Image (cartoon, rainbow, N blue to C red; front, top):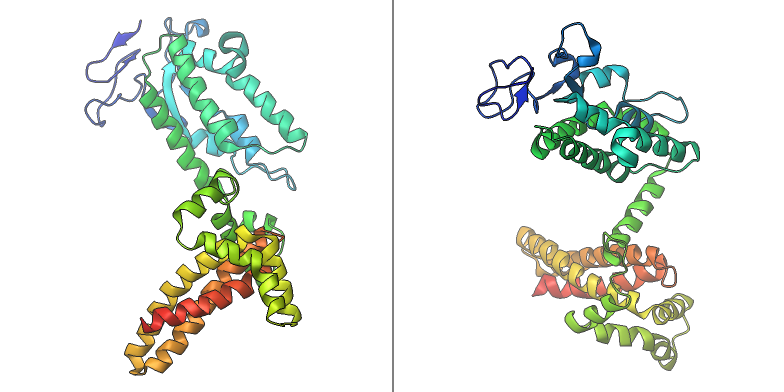
Length: 347
């Protein structure tokens, strides 16, 4: 029979043991979390009669899903092994809850087995699997659903504790060397270029993938960022200004044309480079002035630091806005950053 155990936060066949904080489920009690190979054996309503099994030590995230997700497609070897499974965190639950959580004929299409089949179909078709969206959160929600559907003594908090323990163990199974070996080789220049592009994406796009400066984002920038509208107008007028000044240098002419073709991106570079160049130029310039006693050296260092900062910002934005381009972005940002760095160093 199933007997309640005082102070345990749940119930268990056969009682609990010491060594656990007050108010937490005792080993063997429903809701207790421990590695599978450290959980007490299953209990039965009638000893020796397998049909009367009362308990399961349940992995919230199924073995097959973690194994398939961590399998190297080149070698067929999984990081999440049978040994990982045996040492992974499990939750002591009622047999009925475990069956409902696992099988479609009890738990429906969100049960473990149907979801595992869908994940394997995606992998076989060459499609990726999103750990958070396809494994972690569906497994957590499925366990909560199964507990509610079967009237389990297990709480959502205990389910969360168990799955987070599994997640911690999962990240400890990944072999960093194997991950690095699986990445395509890159030169130092390629790594720097990719870093610059990623920096540019973080400026232009939100974490949700929305362009900060298109549509509503552009309207907000024009209304809230001082100088943005003026920079945008200047970008659109750049080719006319260059032509009226009689400048024929190919680099300057092409940069002006790129700015006019992408005025919002160019304005982003101008404002970002001005702020970044001023802050970095000011810090470097004053540090050099203080160290050498020469304001001229400080101004020179601040100007160079501002130019470098502006060029980096411009190249980053230009790398993700093809119409502007990396080169034009770097030139615009470098020029604006140099001016801002000089001002910051003597301010």
